[in-house]
Image 1 (spheres, helix red, strand yellow):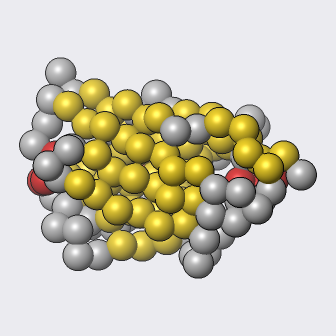
Image 2 (spheres, rainbow, N blue to C red; image 1 turned 30 degrees about the vertical axis):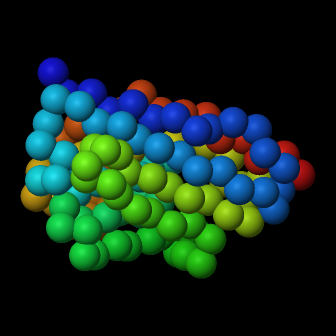
Image 3 (cartoon, rainbow, N blue to C red; image 1 turned 45 degrees about the vertical axis):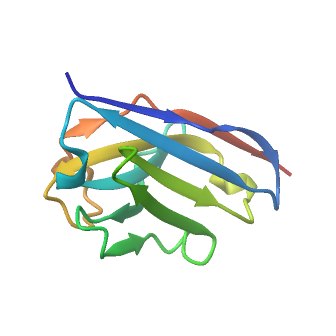
Length: 124
């Protein structure tokens, strides 16, 4: 049974930082590209960034460039999203997703498995 479990969300002031983690189980983690998405009520889920299964390629949405960093630790079967200089508009539920032999695709339909999400709230 595949599970992706996000953690690290919470309430932070604008300008602050958070590091989200996504721990995977039930799959060969090193074979999966990992993506981060976010969603606010009433809006479609939005691509944040992704790291390829090889770890060599990383892609960010324009909204994340220069502020967010994605990394992965295959030994721990975990992908991270370091978020700095947070803004109120970053407030959302953040999801991680896994894509078998995936690259850095921003289309959520390509992802095979999803976590349950973690809430990030940035106060002004």
